Amino acid sequence: MKLAIVILNWNGRAMLEKYLPKVLDYSRDEATVFVSDNASTDDSLRWIEKHCRECKIISLEKNWGFADGYNRSLKQIDAEYYLLLNSDIEVTHHWLTPLIEFMDNHPEVAACQPKLLSEKDKDSFEYAGACGGFLDRYGYPFCRGRIFETVEKDYGQYDYLQEIFWASGACMMVRSKDYWAAGGLDGRFFAHNEEIDLCWRLRIMGRKLYCIPESYVYHVGGGTLPKGNPMKTFLNFRNNLTMLYKNLPEKDFIHVMRVRRVLDYVAAFETLIINRNWRDFTAIFKARRAFRRWLPDFYEDRKRIQNMRKDSTADERESFSILRLYYIKGIRQYSKIV
Image 1 (cartoon, rainbow, N blue to C red):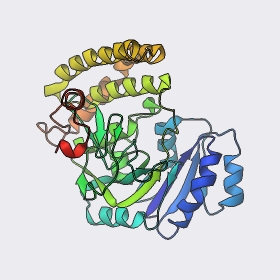
Image 2: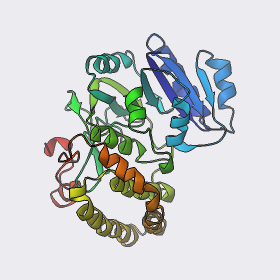
Image 3: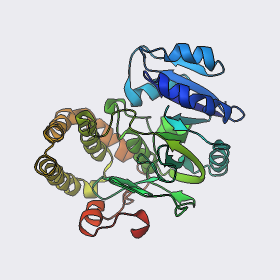
Image 4: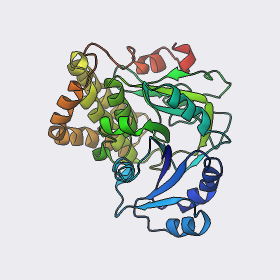
């Protein structure tokens, strides 16, 4: 099989009903579509069996979350390329062709993504990936088209091929051999930051990632956990710290982890004092405690990942602090950085 599109589902009948038929219509000549179900309790699977019979179903025995749900599903699929696709993505005509052609012609590239636009405001980028992701010196992710809460309008300003640090897990095409060589998604993360962690490992291996804006899709977003949910805050902080621990090069490790400890506590008290959000305040403290508790589980991961480095002097992150640029210098657009 050349390309397997894999949609992970958990009680997502409404999203599948709205977006899956178009995925099938616009992909049938180039890919096989799978829905992998994380033990849904709604009638998702019955609806698929009745209305989308050409879609293949993988049934998992329980809700494994995003990361392990994909790992367990992809092990059952033999394909050259996987395309991880959220159930709340609206695809467009010929969306696959530029991605497949680029990957076929660039064997040094492990993964790519299309341009992600907002389904709710189709002239704007979408928060979770926009036109390709990057990581600043201290581990804060940002995108072409989105820095923190500032999402840009799409005027075609990023309609050029761009090597990126991370591709969005909402719509990521990845070579199967690279996916497994890097170890797949880290199932311990459950959800949030897992695709950035995977992409960082791919880059450590010397592989490249790109955004292909000739292909574009529309994303609803917020399907795993809504913004403002304290569990989302907890997972983002805990997983981001764990990702840094696993992947940071030795030369920056101590400095970055010390700075992040200060910045995390500043973020917690800012949330409490300015936003009066007690739940997010406690979520950040809980995330740091959880990170410290499970740190021993990642000792061997760090050793293995650092041994994977093709160039011990290479650094995959940007050299600047996006916090400084955003909050002190007032830079809100990616185009003002480069």
